[in-house]
Image 1 (tube, rainbow, N blue to C red):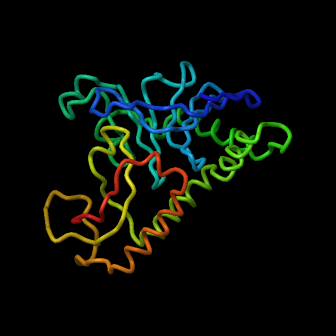
Image 2: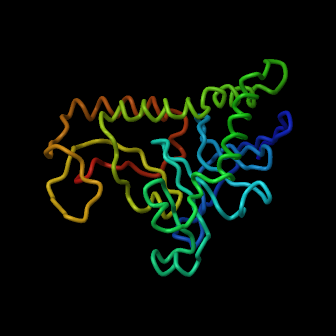
Length: 247
């Protein structure tokens, strides 16, 4: 690890995650994030300077075992330990992955709109603001380069990054492989086709329009743009996901 102190916080490079693959009864993480300790919270960033995970310590955070994960589409998933028995009966896991669509199904109070996450996001914005003010001589070069990336990735910058990814793909990704929720399994989406040939009555993810294949030239162009988009962070991704619904 390489550790630096910045203002009232700490930045840690080479903070390697687990290297033994498997499904655990609690959220685990892999890859090589940059970990920032700031205002009672822990923020993990990818190598592009984008926020990936949030957790914290009591009293700033309800429980250090609970984690918020941010997707490349700028969606937040809250891994809650509330109702261990219920979670295991439903999912065979000891935590509940909660997103904005499922929050009302599992918990009485939505943690994604609660005070803890709000404080964490305020602390995150404060860190990005402080990063934007760093001077060339104030910190070592490696830390300075990281802070400059982070300074461009506040909440607005993250939403713009997600919009850019959607623009590259030319569509949205309504559903991802279950592994991307059950464990910290990062995939790069590549659209080979759009729509779905099935008409399952229970499906909540079917997109509008008929099924169609993308052209080879379109797929190659996506690959080139995705390479530039993920750039030096490719080491943190485990697979290519061929979307959209029925690929």
